[in-house]
Amino acid sequence: MNIDECKEIAARKAASFVEPGMVVGLGTGSTASFFVRCLAERVAQGLEITGIPTSEATRELAAGLGIKLGSLDDYPELDIAIDGADEVEKGTLNLIKGLGGALLREKFIAQAAKRFVVIVDATKPVTSLGERVPVPVEVVRFGVKSTLARLIKAGAKTVRARRTLQGDSFITDNGNYVLDCSFGLIEDAAALAERLDSIVGVVEHGLFVGMTQDVIIAREDEIEQWSV
Image (cartoon, rainbow, N blue to C red; front, side, top):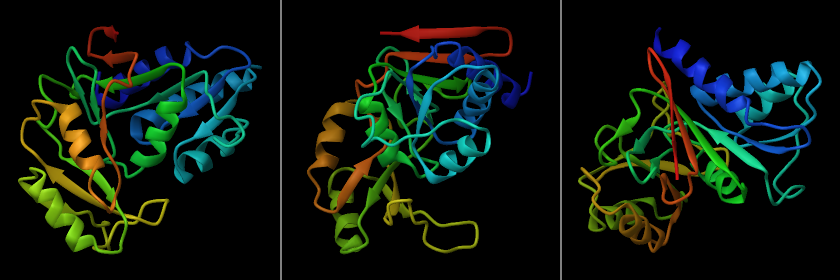
């Protein structure tokens, strides 16, 4: 199986967790889009749920597939949220998320959910966070150079302003910039998260610490599930 086939298998497994009447957080990114499509198939067969999207892209996809949508203001507590991740740390199930740029809304939804399920392919589990990807940090535009300097003081080895494919500054759905920060191997994700939270100008970061209940990993020959 190729990676997309693995993602679809994991997405179908996650979609099976959704029960009638649930309020469901809908993630953002390539893996999450497979889940949204699998969930839409069940909706077309009569499953009644309400989806809360984590991005405008997911909202557009889900609405186009016939999924009833609401907002976090309408439903401050969700039954379940299902999303992808850029890295999953073995043992802790801590995550790095946000390479798709929706980390703030994704964290809102994950925090509001009674159960947060992450679906990934076999390339995403790591021994320590930071092995393969940077930590995305969403920042306000005002004083961005000052914020960048404070991120370096907080331990970032490199900080890169995210750009679009056209070379323009990447702007989130919330109107902010994203700085991709490489910290090397992260020994204490909770401590780093606390340092980032203390920086004025940081809106949110892609460290999801202690938020995940289940991770579904699609490998070439099996589906593996990690739980806490």
